[in-house]
Structure formats: C-alpha cells, structure tokens
Amino acid sequence: MSVAVPRYVVRHADAIEYQPTDPSEFIDGVQVGEEHVLRSEGSHGNEHEAYLWRTGAPARCEYLFPGDESFCVLQGSVTIDLGTGEHIELKAGDIASFPKGTHSVWTFSEPFKKFGVTSN
Image 1: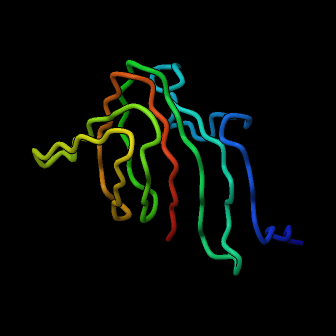
Image 2: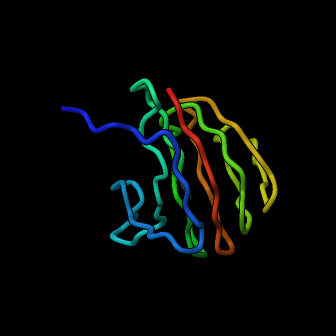
C-alpha cells in the first residue's frame, strides 16, 4: 500500500530538522552534509525530490548528480570542479542546473545551504 503524497508542503526553513540521508554524505567517518526532504515523490508517483541541504566548512566531497538537479544557493558559496578543467563558483542567490550523471567535486570554505529539486 502506498502512502498518499500531500497536495502541498509548507515548512519554515529555520524550524526544520536536518539529518544525514546517504552514506556518500560521510567521508572517512565524518558527516559532510545533511538534508531535510520536503517532498520525495511527485503527484503521479514520478521521481521528484524537493529538499534543503546544508554543510559546515571547511568541507570537500565528491558528488554524482543522481538525477537532473536544479538548485538555488541560499547561504555561503561553493566551488564545483567538473573534472573537465572547468570550475564553477556559486554564491548565495545563484541558481544552477546540472544533468543526471554529472560527476563533480564540491569545495566549501564557509557554511553552505541550498534549496534543490531533483527529478528523473
């Protein structure tokens, strides 16, 4: 039996609980980031996740985009190395979108928070 997906979700960003959700968010036993999932499934059962994600600093982690992902940086900044010699610098207020399967290394020099949406 599947759980009904609510028609809408409302949260206050400063009053929510974060938790680690993926073993990849731990490097050498140290937690790199944590998230709060607002929605983990679309209204028709499709893969769709809306979430807040944050990390402290300094931090560095490898990340393989699990789906098409778009996000807005809410706090801090990050340097994203795409492994092609290309580095992307993002700061609070910037928005970005990456296709599924993109390999990247993220480097944080200050606390960081983003709101993101991932779909397949």
